[in-house]
Length: 118
Image (cartoon, rainbow, N blue to C red):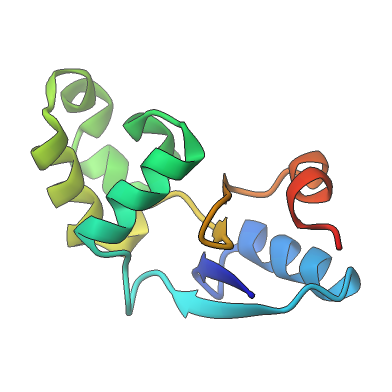
C-alpha cells in the first residue's frame, strides 16, 4: 500500500491521485498540511529517494518565497532544513509517494509508470 502525502487543492496532487486510481493502485492519503511528515519520516524519505534536500521544497510556493529560502538553503545545515520542512507542510514538495522502499516527489507520469504501475 502506498502513502501519498498530498494537499487536496494541489493540481499536481490531483493528477497523481487520478493516475493511481486509473491504474488501480491502492494508496492511503495523508494531508501534508494537517499532518506534515515528521523529522524521522523526512530523513527516511530523503535516504530512500537518494535526492538532495532542496528537492523536498515546494520552490514555487508562496511560503518558500516569503521566507527567502532560495538564498538561505545553500548555506543551511540539515537540522535547519528539517526544521523548515516540518514547520509548514506548504513548504514541502508534493505529492510525496512512497511504499516504504521507493519514493517519488511530484508527478511525472514516466516515473509513476516505472515505480507504481502494478
